[in-house]
Image 1 (spheres, rainbow, N blue to C red):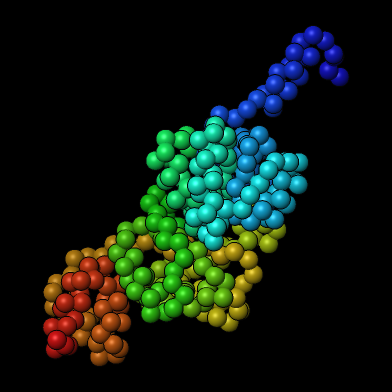
Image 2: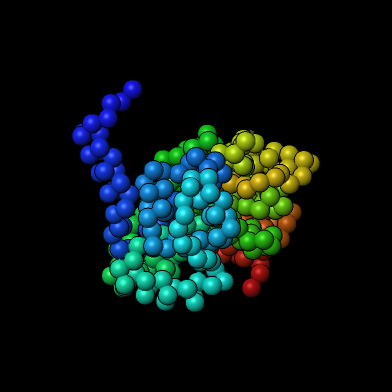
Amino acid sequence: MEQEGPGNDTRKENQREKLSARLAPGLYVTATPIGNAGDISLRALDVLARADLVLCEDTRVTAKLFAIHGIKVKTAPYHDHNAAEMRPRVLKRLEAGEAVALVSDAGTPLVSDPGLKLVQEAVAAGHNVTALPGASSVLAALTLAGLPTDRFFFAGFLSAKQEARRKELAELATIPSTLVFLESANRLAASLADMAATLGNREGAVARELTKKFEEVRRGPLAALAVHYEEAGAPKGEVVLVVGPPEKRAVLCAHEVDAMLENALARTSLKDAVAEVVAMTGLPRREIYARALELSGAK
């Protein structure tokens, strides 16, 4: 048993002083758990407990996290619908020397979450802005996918409509890195099918409910994943899609590209033929489109 004494009393007093000390003024961009409430840093808990104000995407969601960790501090909503109104108020508080923390419902703020304009304006006004790193569904899925991690591109959410989605995928097709997407569970099967058609049948991984009890990562070729979720239906929980990089291809001769285009044009529309050949060859879309127009005789 630890003995009471002058040294022990001093340590306790130092701890009390540390807890009661004011934070340095500024904006603290703070990561929160993506599922498991234990995935939050000691530094984040300390800052959140001592901040003058915590800006929350949804105060009700943050209140549950605070209840688990015994945090009692003033909160205010900060989301896409009230951000323009809230930013001037927050900047005034920063100007007055307050410490303001920014959190999203889950994970790291600004990564497909509100906060970018607030950070930009705080920086422009000369206020201190610091990040408290932590949980991220993007990095968690990437580390579990079993796909190359040395180079990756985060593409966020794709468009809900197929035509726009396929156009976005065609623009990403030649990026020489692993791709990471966020996706609605209801659109998962359709998006996987479009990825297989536009990017080629690359290896992929669907990660859901990360850090939670029913965490699942399903891996396989994109076409097989599309079939699985078409048959099984939309899964429950948040979904992150990871898609492997394009295969390195040998340099193709012009007549080989023409043959591929002619074959595709005979089966589908010019637009889809271009997307197909771009995915197969990795060549620039502008170049393939121009050649497709010549071969089809379109003006």
